[in-house]
Amino acid sequence: MAMRRGCARPACAEPATVTLSYGYGSATVWLEELTPEGHPMTHDLCERHAARTVAPRGWTLVDLRGTGTTVAKAMAEPVAS
Ligand SMILES: [Zn+2]
Image (cartoon, rainbow, N blue to C red; front, side):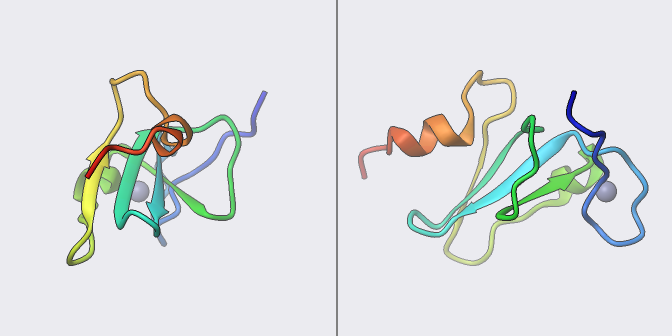
């Protein structure tokens, strides 16, 4: 079992339910259901902070929760631009 992880935001004690990652190549901010293992390039967030996430200017926010797709899969199949 993976260790229970908490929200990455300072002073937040909520359990993490969402993993946020940045796709620098495609200027995409990804939200997905909490990944089984933490990764140095991703941030684990609670539901509340995930909902507050906004993409930086010029970036697209893509929420994969509930789609059955993960960021790893989405990145492996880039959307035609
Ligand atoms: Zn939080």
